[in-house]
Length: 338
Image (tube, rainbow, N blue to C red; front, side, top):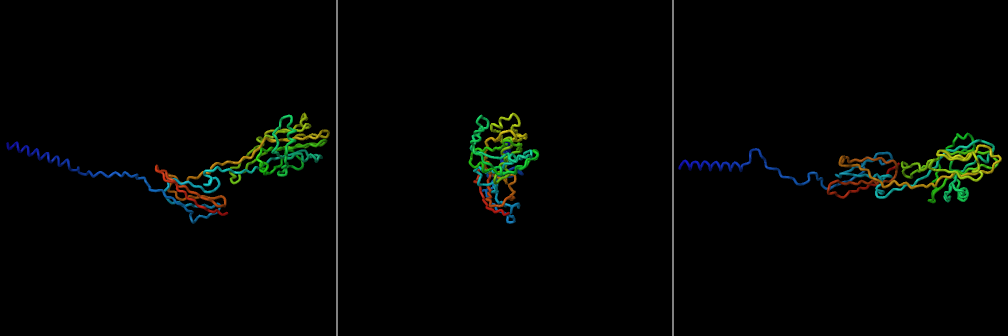
């Protein structure tokens, strides 16, 4: 009996020891850390400000330094210059165009009929009906009003070698488009009756559209081929079996170097197709992105102005978080001197 009691006592002590051991932390095991449920990338409310570096010289060609402060993810920049102006961010920018016409011309031979030395005039019409090919074409040409603009250009004065072309210079013809109607350019050429004839040629005709305020947008509006000249002649000229005036993609020619001593008065109009002067639409001005997440620590922006004037400089700061905050817009007015 005593042995049985002894066995029970030993078993109870073992069970107590096991329970105590289970309630004790293993050696070297630390308490679990608390979990931080807040976003560790949060940077707080966005802030932004900008100023011009006091060391900047506000002159054409010099570098203007803009010093930025804050924590935006992205900054966009409007310099205020043409093409990068905040005032045109929602408005399409239209530029007026100056039309400059140029060409090269020659005439020959140098003969004793001075009345034919001045055998060509450059004219234009805004009321011509455009008929250059029907049986009534010459009558319709005569019914139109043609204005002479030859004096805006340089032409050879005395006939010589037909290959010695004279550069016309760039003549401004913008005003001929003022009525807002299609314009027809024409070379009005004549050969007097009973005279020694003179041949006249025009090559390399071009109308350049010069964009006011942004010359980088300037372009050629019409080439010689695109002008589309076509001859309309009086009956005496049209009746010639040979030596007719001609037009190709590269030249306009009033022909006839042979004698016209027994011939009648001859006349022709080399008339272009209808011409218009468009306004150039450059679209809306776009900003320059100067700070992104990849370079968000670049808080100095440098810019060089090429023209003197007053500029409204605009910086737009934004973030790219899920819960986006409103943009911060900062405006500076600066004056660039020559």
